[in-house]
Image (cartoon, rainbow, N blue to C red; front, side, top):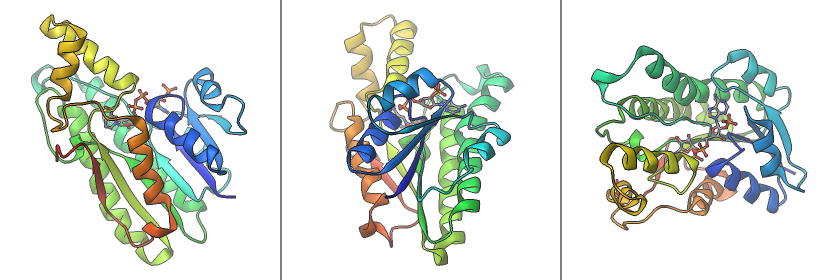
Length: 239
Ligand SMILES: NC(=O)c1ccc[n+]([C@@H]2O[C@H](COP(=O)([O-])OP(=O)(O)OC[C@H]3O[C@@H](n4cnc5c(N)ncnc54)[C@H](OP(=O)(O)O)[C@@H]3O)[C@@H](O)[C@H]2O)c1
């Protein structure tokens, strides 16, 4: 039975990934800061819930007291604001969670992986393009892609692959928060805000978490053993 780790498994995309791997027979560990959210994801499955702060080195080290064959670095934080308005504290927090968190997760995963494995980062279309008001988030996600592409080369001979999934707007609590931010900023209805948010997706709709799960499942499959250092866009053709 494959040991699978999903960081940020207590909500949104991570919850959908964890439930899918558990339903197909994997031994799934989910990790995050809110144990109640993790327990809700677990439900009546045999998932293991672990406390984790991805930006804290000791916390990440403690999580890797066993090997995992599939490690999905999904935990992340949103942030909006123009560069001129960003505090150093907000910048540091997003870089710490979204970029340093993936670095620590993959580094500790590698220390345990013996005979191959899969490292998968949930990056973003913001890894591939910039945008107004998302400078810190986009910088962190561009960094994730640089990390993934470099690590992919480092592990290429070891049976390990390292890839990124780059979703557009996905229907999760993070996207909800973005919609609420647009509603407040432009004084528009939820429908209008949602339409503004999904306007960059040529399909003009929110992506379902299940569509991200499908991409992750492919990258974790035996059939993807030569897919390495790839950024798989799940964005309706946005980029
Ligand atoms: N939704 C989108 O439109 C979208 C698009 C592209 C990429 N993404 C990426 O997809 C990933 C999942 O996001 P989501 O949309 O599912 O949002 P979400 O529902 O807000 O999930 C984020 C998860 O990350 C965890 N997390 C945050 N900070 C953490 C920390 N310091 N340590 C450990 N866990 C932490 C949260 O759990 P706790 O609060 O319990 O720690 C939460 O479960 C993120 O990397 C996000 O950037 C999302």
